[in-house]
Each structure stands twice: as C-alpha cells, then as structure tokens.
Image 1 (cartoon, rainbow, N blue to C red):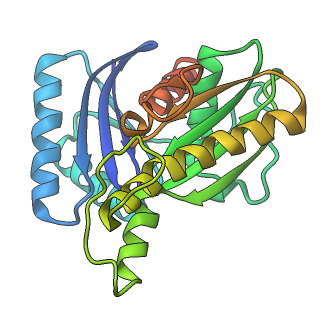
Image 2: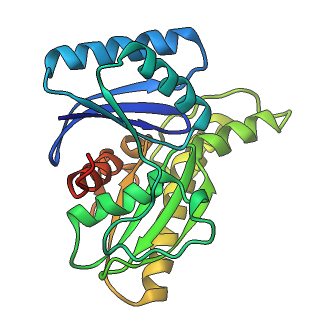
Length: 255
C-alpha cells in the first residue's frame, strides 16, 4: 500500500493507493510557509494510522519548489517510509515523441495513462483545467499525437483584473446565461461560458482534424465548476492523474 503525493502548481493532492484503488483523498493549497508542512505532516500521520500497511510515499510533481520542501520534510519526519520520486516519462507501449521530454509535465504524462485505464478502444482527449488548461491527445493505439497549453480560467481572470484599471476587483460567480448586464455578470459569464466554449470548440477541432472517434476526459482542480457547462458526454474525473500514477506503479516491479 502506498501514499501518493501529486504536487501541482497550486495544490498538493494526497491519496492512498492499493493496486488500482484510490482512497482517502486530501487536498492542500500550496503555500510557502511553515503551516503548510504542519498540515502536510498531520495528514500523513493520520493516513498512516488509518492504513498501517502504508510502506512507501510516491511523489509526482510539477512544482519544483514545493516538491523540494516536501521531500526534505518527509526524509526528516518519516524516515521509515520509502520515498520514490517519479521522474521517468516512459511507459511500456506508450509511444510518445515530445521535444525535450523533461519539459513534458508529469501531470500530463500521468493524465494520458489515466485516460488509458478508462478507455483503450478509441483515442482520448484529456483536458486538465487548473492553473493552466492543457490538452493532450492520444490515439487508439496509445500514440501521443500532441497537445495544447493555455492559461487556466482563474489565471486569465486574475490577470485581467490586475491589468485593467476600470474593472475593479471581483470574484467570479457561476452564471449560465449568455449575456450580462453588469460588469460582474459580464466577467462571470465570460469566465464560465468563454472557457467552456473554448474547450468544446478545440475538442471539436481535434476530432475533425483526425477524423476518428475520441473520448474526452475533463480533469483538474476546476473540474467541478466547468462540469455543468460542458457536454454531458465528456467524462469528468478529478482523479485521472492519480489513476495514471496507480497504473504506472502497478506495472513496474521496482515499487
């Protein structure tokens, strides 16, 4: 039994992995202060108490600064747990050609594996909505076809507010209309409808370009917000990255 830490740009996800089963999921906002490590240690201690068979901590990361702090902390605080940091981006029959594979985010890599666990009959389009919105496309024979990286909805929203003097400060509320009659409503509808229609349009362009059937997966921290605005035929799964990590661990003997 293993404890997985998925360190994203904005938050860290902790979960217990037993084969393909993912449980006991916890979230921590990535804040560079001592309280973050206190909260992290408390979560790990509680999970180890609940699951005494945990013998290893496995880390996947895209935030190097937070990873470095967590790694040092775990080595000091939990010396009895084996620590394994996932760096290699190779997996059996996954055919991936990416210029400078080191720059291919581990979250994107494991998203592709996660999609494969749920769909091995058609191609898959994986959309991860977080600090960035990423698209990754794999064919039915598990070949990586390419991807896109776009500023995430909150990233764009925050940038807009900080770079315009007349708009003011707002938090988006989640509107389902098409047009707003106040600045706040216009911003909020732009946030929800603008981003969801962009995602839907890009998915359609990818399908039309490659001319085959694809299953679209939506994952990432903002999944729950955009689930209500995107087509119901999409598969919404916030645990997709963790499922990819579980598949990777399950199929390598050195874990």
